[in-house]
Image (cartoon, rainbow, N blue to C red):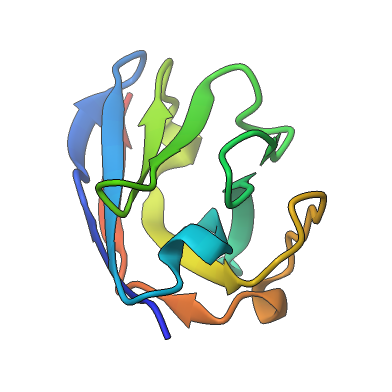
Length: 127
């Protein structure tokens, strides 16, 4: 199992930037693909980004492509989400999640395909 703790959320003006971090504990972090999801009020949780366990492959939702960047540090057991050019519609609770023992080529984006979840961090973008 992987325990996940997100941080870095907050209030930012439209056009601004934030960097989210997700610290992981447990022996399987480096064997896990990692994802970021978000859930806005009254909406379903949705996929944002994914990174393979070796950091080589990344995938993004169309809504964030070109603005968000996912990365990871397997020495620090941390995954990051750099969010630039933020928009009010990016306002949501952001969650990181682990897809344990996923193949490097896997591009899974469904919530049910992830094994472990953090508690989330709030991101609010004002207009």
